[in-house]
Image (cartoon, rainbow, N blue to C red; front, top):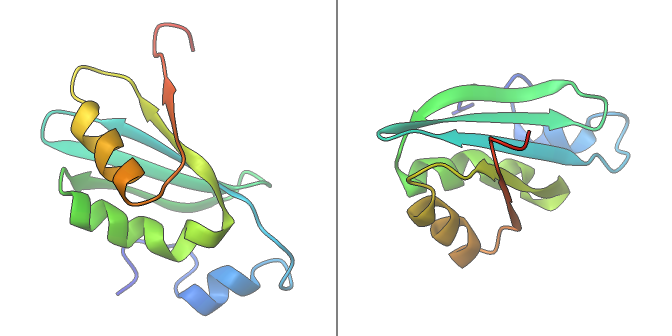
Amino acid sequence: MNNGLLYHDEKQINSFQGGAQVTVYVGVDVHSNNNYIGIVNQANEVLFKKRLANDLGTVLSVLEPFREDMAGVVVESTFNWYWFVDGLMDNGYKVHLANPAAI
């Protein structure tokens, strides 16, 4: 299952750029019943972009192949971010809140 990955499997993700360490950045826009996840590398190449249902298990399965190379997850601090951030942090992800009014 590729979950919408543009680089289609974990081996391909880990060997991207000739096996060199690749840092990836994750941004999430959480809405009332869905979220949009974007993942890019340090060259600003899109590795993943997709709207998902607000289901923590689904989100975690999408993030897992990128976990080793992830700098962190930025979540827009809207009215319903609490459960999302708590779930990510409970699963060991480094989370940063972004104030949409300040960006």
